[in-house]
Length: 296
Image (tube, rainbow, N blue to C red):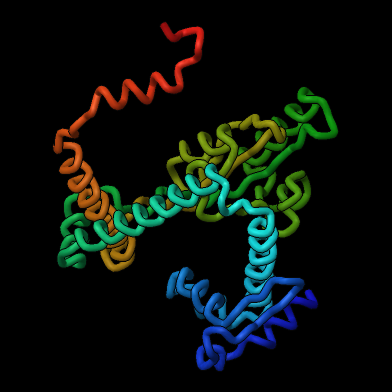
């Protein structure tokens, strides 16, 4: 926390006016310069930079991370690891990975061209049935729990209440207040608005969506929580989502699709080029690593 506050105070809007070699943080033999912080900032996507750079705590965390990295690198260099053959190979592999990633990203961005508003709208028209609000129901339920009683006792109580509710002897909403053992009933009085498929346990969901008419009651429904009595209060049929509501999603998907196709075309083009292979050199290299017992 102390480090974060210190370096949060160090980082102000004037940092971009500082010289590249001006130090921002030191510890032991390690030092982080203004340039190193600027270099790190470049790696942050532009849309996220304001949120990061306006947080003193976050800037402090970044500075601490850079300083720790610098300290570790200094120790590795002091140990001579930079000249280790295996480390040299990893250096080159890392360089290749960065270049490949940057090149493939550029290929994708260059290949994703077009009127994305129009492309998105064409996709919307072609797949209208996919852009619908989900079916939902408003229901009210009463629960007789099996948590603190055996199943038979719970079913007996639920059967009695169910019969009295259906006959009109007992008002359902009043019965919920007096008898329901759902912990949420105290706050929601048994009401669950806008229930979608997949939100409730399966027996409850199946019974709720089978109800057809407003005010209909389910049969007793057994779940792992006990016995439910469910009333249908309202149905929400699927409706077409307006284009403007899904436009952003469609544009992002279309852009991603075109980027992937551009990279695929490039990859296929490379694969079509037949490589030259020096079989003798390959065999000689394999022979160099062949165990002695396998050499003739």
